Length: 120
Image 1 (tube, helix red, strand yellow):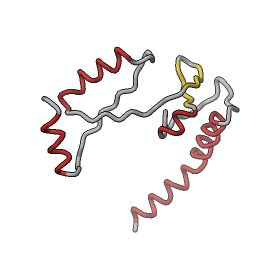
Image 2: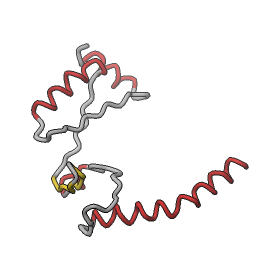
Image 3: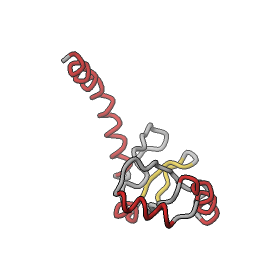
Image 4: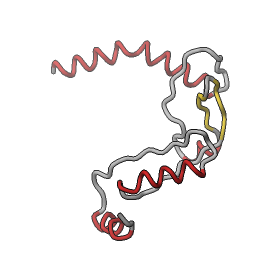
């Protein structure tokens, strides 16, 4: 019960901060962004549909607009450095987004197939 009360109290205390973040985020999305004002970046490309339409992000102090496509590549952990080097060599951006996430669970037959198919 104490924990629930603390969470509720913290949630209520965060409302003014969240309102400010919400307003700034949506003003940027609606092209009403004022350069030099504070902003928060929650996502760069939330999904493929939105990314193909438009992505807005801060780069070198300016708000940029571009088209992005989310590409999910599945490989072994041992192959990530090689894959990252390849993406960086062919990607048009100065800083290519490459993020690795561990597989914690999955369909055992699929995971076995990946293990058998992708070399170490």
